[in-house]
Length: 435
Image 1 (tube, one colour):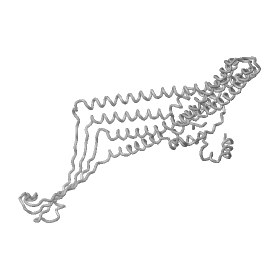
Image 2 (cartoon, rainbow, N blue to C red; image 1 turned 135 degrees about the vertical axis):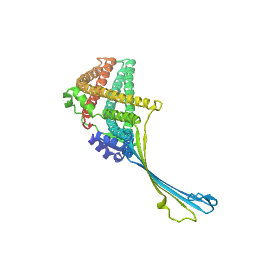
Image 3 (cartoon, helix red, strand yellow; image 1 turned 30 degrees about the horizontal axis):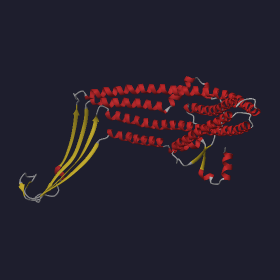
Image 4 (cartoon, one colour; image 1 turned 180 degrees about the horizontal axis):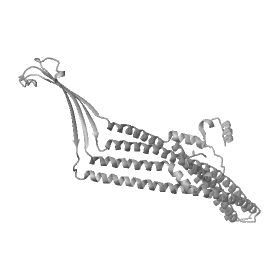
């Protein structure tokens, strides 16, 4: 394939600039860098990390300061003497308050735990998106290569039908066959041309989807380099299939997300239960209230400085069953999260088991497709010769040719299916996805 691209580049200098040759790894690297869904998941994780760090602030006091300046003129009560005066009075007041949450039913601790699990969920979600886009890319990559090979086979079939049509028209003009036989060849050729057009449309759709996965301009021309179609038995399948399933589940990001959601739901339940406990708070205040008039001295800071230390204990008694309902609701959510974890495990078990079954099936399918293709090819070649010699009619030849076309498509498909399924099993077990 690389030699073909080099020859094309030499023949047409603009080729190097208009088309980009890419292996599967090239495409995967671009997807992991530029995929929009993956970028969105990374932003969610960054936001969750900030929320987790901020939740530690609940263990710290809240501090606020305030200041006020009041100026009066004319008849006014002097706050120092409580007498009416006509002098200008200036009043300055300020304070600093620090509120300490000494105990709030472990709400702060459970909030930290919940936010930590939310961060873990978003981190696992990044891996889940990477997981999914990798498999999606591999499916589209394989489908494109398959369609390209099938299109080449379709074009060869159309060329073969064109030659048969020429021969059929010669026989008709010679009076050897009827005109209806010519129409049958034309019908077969039209069917093959429709199949070619359908596959070309599918190829275009998959190329667009591939470019969108990589987040590249749709007008950019790319050429996918075909990997070696080595049909080797998957070593991983030698293990017990249930052992493979358990290994795959334990490292699957979707299962990790379920476990993190379960822990987050447990922390949410702890937050809901915190309202049952008394809360103890402490408030420290440092303030000053200074008043100046024409009859007073300037500095009153030390004389008016005040210090306050206050403890507040709040004991919940009854709030119309609102907290009771909230706790019950979060308890159900926690039970549901544990159930969701088991559901996810079952779903992944079916998914991995299907991949194992598909891989074993594709091995047998590839073997039988190879045998069927060889028989159908030889049968078609023999019948094509018989048709030239006039020993069989066009119906018999078309039947043989359709079987040949079908077996050719199945052989191409089985090879790519085996390549994909082999790589998928290894990917499930933690290896990099490589074609």
